[in-house]
Image (tube, rainbow, N blue to C red):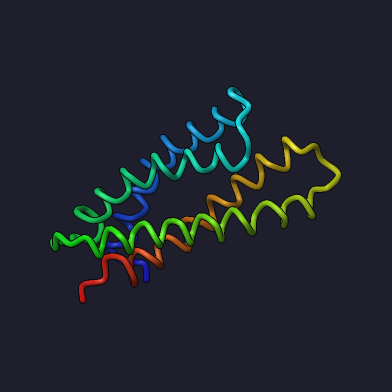
Length: 131
C-alpha cells in the first residue's frame, strides 16, 4: 500500500491541506460560517486542485473520460459525508464538557484525517484505477 503512488498522494494532500485547512478554519473562526459550510468550502476548493494533481501526477491516469470525473465527484462526496458525518457526533460525545467551538474545531481535524484515508482508497481503487 505504501509505494510511490501513496507518497505522491501525500504530497498532493499536503498542498491541498495547506490551502483547504486555511479556508476551512478561516471560514469557521473568522467569518463564523457553520461547521458544514466551512468544511464544505475546504473540499470544494481542495477537490478541484486534487482532481488534476492526482489524475496526472499521483495516479498518472492518461484517459480523458467523463466517467473518471463522475467517479471522482462521487468518491469525494461519499468520503466527505462519511468522514465529517462520523467525526462530528463522535467528537461531540467524547468532548461534551468542552464548548461547541472547541468540539467543532476538533471534529474538523478528525474529519480531515478520516477523509484522507477514505479518499486515498477511493481514488486509488475506484476513481483512477486503470481498467
